Image (tube, rainbow, N blue to C red; front, top):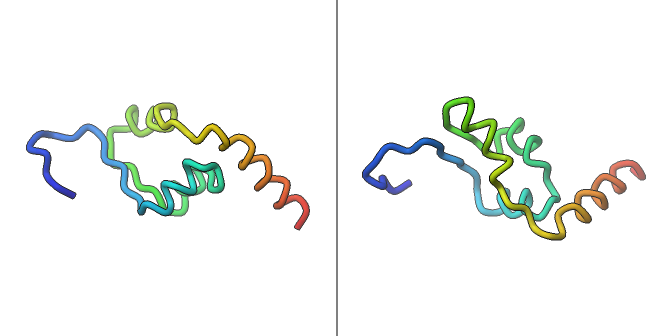
Length: 74
Protein backbone atom coordinates (compact mmCIF):
# COMPACT_ATOMS: atom_id res chain seq x y z
CA UNK A 1 0.00 0.00 0.00
CA UNK A 2 1.25 3.49 -0.84
CA UNK A 3 1.48 5.82 2.16
CA UNK A 4 -0.90 8.73 1.48
CA UNK A 5 1.01 10.96 3.91
CA UNK A 6 -1.73 11.23 6.53
CA UNK A 7 -3.37 8.97 9.11
CA UNK A 8 -5.91 6.49 7.78
CA UNK A 9 -9.14 5.90 9.68
CA UNK A 10 -9.94 2.61 7.97
CA UNK A 11 -8.04 0.21 5.74
CA UNK A 12 -9.86 -2.54 3.83
CA UNK A 13 -7.66 -5.29 2.41
CA UNK A 14 -8.68 -7.98 -0.08
CA UNK A 15 -7.64 -9.15 -3.49
CA UNK A 16 -9.52 -7.82 -6.50
CA UNK A 17 -11.21 -11.15 -7.24
CA UNK A 18 -12.64 -11.32 -3.72
CA UNK A 19 -13.93 -7.74 -3.86
CA UNK A 20 -15.55 -8.50 -7.20
CA UNK A 21 -17.24 -11.62 -5.80
CA UNK A 22 -18.54 -9.65 -2.80
CA UNK A 23 -19.67 -6.73 -5.00
CA UNK A 24 -21.48 -9.09 -7.35
CA UNK A 25 -23.17 -10.93 -4.48
CA UNK A 26 -21.60 -14.35 -5.05
CA UNK A 27 -19.78 -14.20 -1.72
CA UNK A 28 -21.40 -12.64 1.34
CA UNK A 29 -19.34 -9.83 2.86
CA UNK A 30 -19.48 -11.32 6.36
CA UNK A 31 -18.44 -14.75 5.01
CA UNK A 32 -15.44 -13.15 3.31
CA UNK A 33 -14.63 -11.26 6.50
CA UNK A 34 -14.93 -14.30 8.79
CA UNK A 35 -12.71 -16.42 6.52
CA UNK A 36 -10.06 -13.71 6.26
CA UNK A 37 -10.58 -13.01 2.55
CA UNK A 38 -11.45 -9.43 3.52
CA UNK A 39 -9.64 -7.70 6.37
CA UNK A 40 -10.74 -4.47 8.03
CA UNK A 41 -8.32 -2.43 10.11
CA UNK A 42 -10.20 0.33 11.93
CA UNK A 43 -11.71 1.34 15.23
CA UNK A 44 -14.78 -0.83 15.93
CA UNK A 45 -17.33 1.87 15.07
CA UNK A 46 -15.87 2.36 11.58
CA UNK A 47 -15.38 -1.37 11.00
CA UNK A 48 -19.04 -1.98 11.86
CA UNK A 49 -20.23 0.91 9.67
CA UNK A 50 -18.17 -0.05 6.60
CA UNK A 51 -20.65 -2.62 5.16
CA UNK A 52 -23.35 0.08 5.04
CA UNK A 53 -21.08 2.29 2.90
CA UNK A 54 -20.27 -0.44 0.38
CA UNK A 55 -22.34 -0.17 -2.80
CA UNK A 56 -23.17 -3.57 -4.26
CA UNK A 57 -23.92 -4.37 -7.89
CA UNK A 58 -27.52 -3.72 -8.93
CA UNK A 59 -27.74 -7.44 -9.70
CA UNK A 60 -26.34 -8.53 -6.32
CA UNK A 61 -29.74 -9.32 -4.73
CA UNK A 62 -30.61 -11.61 -7.64
CA UNK A 63 -27.20 -13.27 -7.58
CA UNK A 64 -27.41 -13.79 -3.80
CA UNK A 65 -30.85 -15.41 -4.20
CA UNK A 66 -29.54 -17.73 -6.93
CA UNK A 67 -26.51 -18.71 -4.83
CA UNK A 68 -28.77 -19.42 -1.83
CA UNK A 69 -31.08 -21.51 -4.02
CA UNK A 70 -28.13 -23.55 -5.32
CA UNK A 71 -27.03 -24.26 -1.74
CA UNK A 72 -30.50 -25.58 -0.89
CA UNK A 73 -30.58 -27.86 -3.94
CA UNK A 74 -27.23 -29.49 -3.13
